[in-house]
Amino acid sequence: MFEEPKKTEAPAELAQLESEAKRVDQAAPAAGEASAAPKPAEAAQLALDEAETKEWSQCPAIMGRILGRWMPELKDDYSEKNCMEWGRAMLPIARKYNWTLQKLVALLGPWVGLAIATEPFVVGTAVAVHTRIQAAREAEAKRLEAKKDGAPPAGQ
Image (cartoon, rainbow, N blue to C red):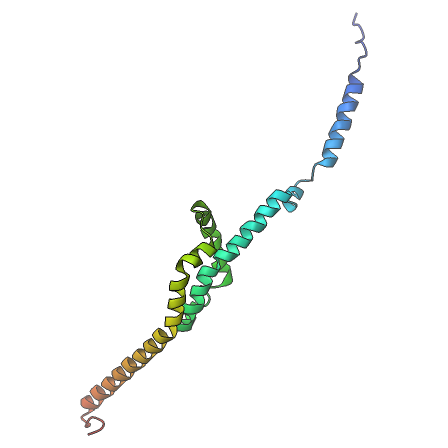
């Protein structure tokens, strides 16, 4: 009643497809390997991004070193990690406007140099003014305390 199907070349085609699939599977990296070994172009771009990020991170790092002399409590805020994060955020903006750190230094270099040369005068002056204000406040507090106690002011 039923005829037996004719034998075709299907098993040969399947064997060929299976062989091709095995070849492709062996050539393809396993899951997770692709991210572990980036292509040469991607690796080169990642290295360039990291180098430019490091370069831009020098802007806040320099500011941190200068400000850290006045306010040591800022040291952790200007950590290498935070400066690198800032550099990473700056990179797309710098690329959009075709900025480089060298261009920025060339443009602002003389002004930054002047600011750095001025810094010792400003710090010295600020410390001296702060010391005098603090001394005047302490002297006034002592004078008011002595007046409240009924003792004659110091020096009289």
